Image (cartoon, rainbow, N blue to C red; front, side, top):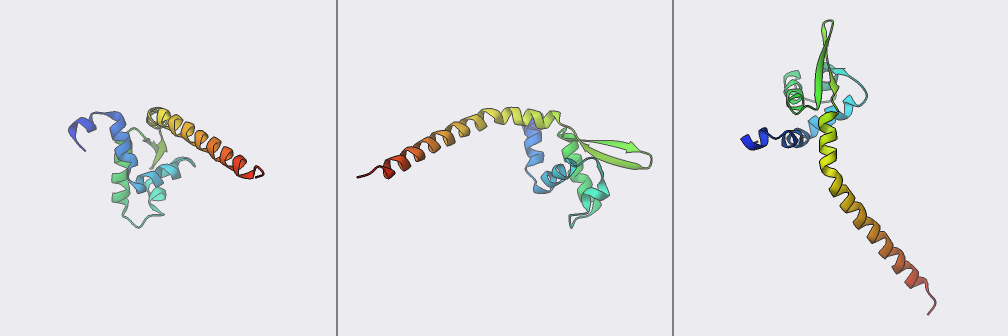
Length: 117
């Protein structure tokens, strides 16, 4: 990641989301907080590798850590995900309009083809 991108929170979020393992970790955290060991269980990687992934997610503001007795749990942080969703919203609206127009066009084609000759 370039220095300019590293100073841009949205770029940091998208960099973190670019990795499928990190996306899978975020998906698991939608069920609630988990330890690094619990997060590492489905993957064929070391705890150190999962810990590095969590560090990237934490630097992007997507997760936080909390100490509970001798356990350290990881949990979702929603603010940066919301920022990414807010950035994507105009593009989602653009594509929804395009799909609505396509649906209208396909319906008109179907109606035209069903008219008696």
